Length: 401
Image 1 (cartoon, rainbow, N blue to C red):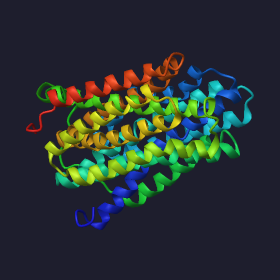
Image 2: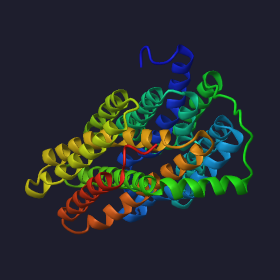
Image 3: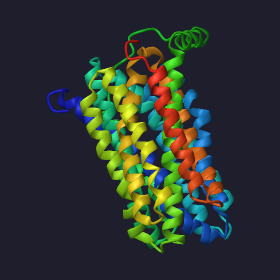
Image 4: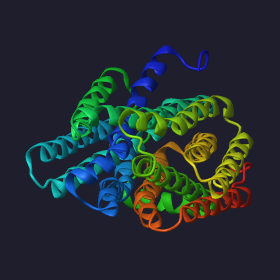
């Protein structure tokens, strides 16, 4: 990023990057703790997966609304209240786990509140970065940092979640409002998005412009939406699977378990950072990164079909993590740079909403598949990777604006 943007913009970008970091920690930090919660509350695999899923379902429904409001009112006016709501959700889940004998229902309510907050936080950051920079290379670089912050949160979350849960099992819930408060403070100090120069369209005109966008660019936009969904489905499904088998099959607990979960996520984070720096404004590079990423994802799931031990499973996730790290920043850049600023918040919010759909669907479906042979999960993930390659080659046209 050196030499690409001025100091103020760098600080603003770093402050904005705390939002995906906090939102990721608020969700992914719970993945290594799920087996512990399952034992403490005496609930099933499927029921415990709902702690991740309800959060994501609420976000799916509200993200497009948050995107529209951010286009109308401004990004910062949506992000800060959303972080406050997410913090309140964390307080509810933590308090219920601490004080109630049977807290599951209140944990779910707290996670729903947290999902409401998350809808207006991370998804609004993406168009905010697009608004801050005029040059497409700066946008790609900025989005690479945001996606890296998102994935770094995934690297840190299993370790931090395991450490906190080793002290008190519900402590990760209480960490969420503290993290939200830090992000709010940094955004208030450093983030100053550009003022909107154009008159805001009426809702009717706005919806008409969105309809026109999908009429003109619907093919590649829907393709990007599907690809984002596939990636998050595979990522969160496999993390849920790995978190469960590390304890039940390999007797790996606590911080060691968090460190194992962090290995593939570290590869994802590092690759995402490099990809954001290298793709610039070159859409051909973006498409190549997406194709190579999905090839790696597909190949990676062949390994554990033939070799049944913990090392190949981690190697699978390591390789797929690199593939995801190549794909995500490229998808973010394509969907952000291809849409005008007036509608960018809504379109990128729809994209984020469908990514959350993958997050919501992954854990419960993998929990169901875990009742049968492990190969079922590997075949499904491999097939989805192949579908991703086909969709990218067939429907993403890099000569389109």
